[in-house]
Image (cartoon, rainbow, N blue to C red):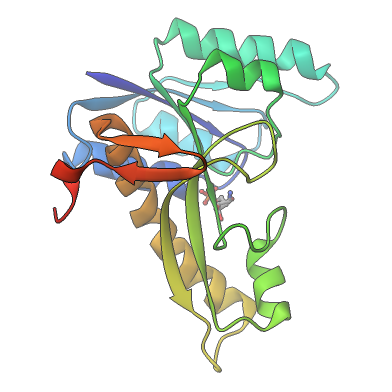
Length: 206
Ligand code: GRF
């Protein structure tokens, strides 16, 4: 049984999609061991409690980064977390945090990286006028929205779109992409060559 740890700061729809995938057996032999928010107001924490999951608020506000990270890492370790999933977690992880879970922290970002890193990626893409955008699930390294890419899903920008309709269609794809990426990582049949995640031959054509 693999233990997932979820870090979030807000709405928590990606977390909820992961929880549904776990419940439906689409992420086999896994459970959500803990959900942690750095913000007390995060709706995702309510959802986690409603689902009967271990859910904690570890406030970051007014706290030194190192102190907060030590608290979060120890909560993850206490719950024997194998894979940390950032799901709308509005904190940049320090190199120390990243080293505690080498190759075992994932993030989802609402653009086709390396385009439009940082905040409001959907609005950035819309304003730039790209015809295709999407979402990316990647390993977390020390840099923002930067580590090796695991899954990307493309979303066309329609003439009829506004920022909101585009964001909604990206979000639908995020919910699919995160489950795909977790399964790839748990199956472990890949290697990272430079920045490239290459799936091993047996997995191709699945
Ligand atoms: C998503 O768009 C995700 O890609 C980004 O933050 C947003 C979180 O949404 N990192 P939710 O809290 O999962 O609904």
